[in-house]
Length: 227
Image (cartoon, rainbow, N blue to C red; front, side, top):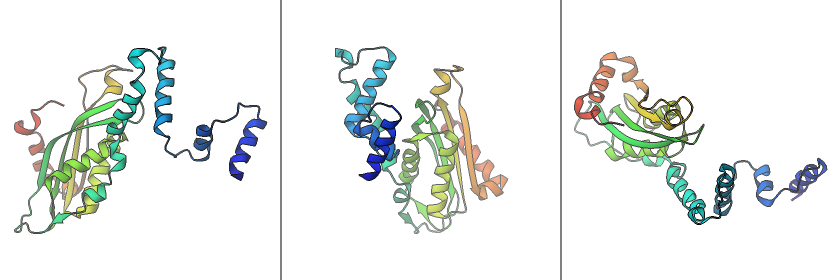
């Protein structure tokens, strides 16, 4: 514990209040995961900061509810996209046209304001002798969505994970989403959607392949559903 004592001595020498055990742990390792109790106490602090009484009846169980909700919202940190995409199939009878899954609904959270990003993903790949179980495309979207994100990074992560695991002739990913950090605060512009895309291999190099994918994405049967 020599490092702990050094840190504590320096902190006290500067005239500051003594560090709590949780604050000391965080100072030593900023990436250490707080306990459930520490997470719930952080919610109580935010409730008091907002101007409410965290001990009143309506809020007494809120910290525990928020922590449980966060376990759902950010469950992607417990998912490994490599594991999701590990199993592939080679018995495809020579199928070599694109595989497209459209309208995959996702719910993510902006890493800047921790507000919801709600949208849909369109994912395609051009097989190179191997294919994935179709649910795996939806699961890899979920794995990256259930994290703190920016849409541009999430788009690239999904495409790169599929490209790395499957080694196809190409991958295409388009995300369309509304960002509550823009619709409910700040500029407050509801009804605005952000679109990002990532193309690799044949989708990037061949405009006809790219147009075919985009025509499928924008077909009435696939694009007629709202975000």
